[in-house]
Image 1: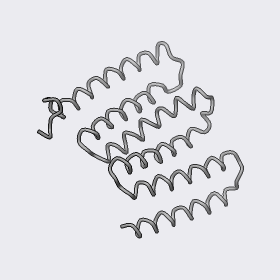
Image 2 (image 1 turned 135 degrees about the vertical axis):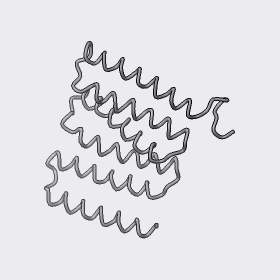
Image 3 (image 1 turned 180 degrees about the vertical axis):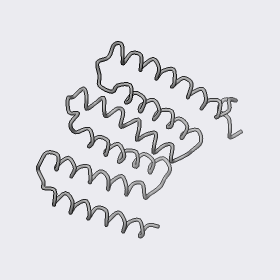
Length: 162
């Protein structure tokens, strides 16, 4: 039967995943207030755990929206910890943008949707120029011109491959 995995219903596994992830989150939140000295660790652990749960649901029910949102949250939470431990928290917004690019690429690969690849590469190039702007290597006008050009290419490719 398609609705079962090893004679267990997928909805039961999804509910069990939610319960286990909730318990893990409560433990991590308690540890973050008692032991860890990481700013907003409770929030970013919530992003990681919720993202993981949504990825599990997307794999069971083959939903691309859960996959996209779950991978975005999961990667954004992991990249916060990465940027916090490497002391590059000032560039965290660049990591948030790259998490959308990675999520689009993963959804394009898993669900075979070509337009997700276009969005992924578009966001990736925007992120590169955001990083160059953050380092003051390009001016705001160059950044805006590249942003507008990128959006025009994205709109054109949408109508081309529709």
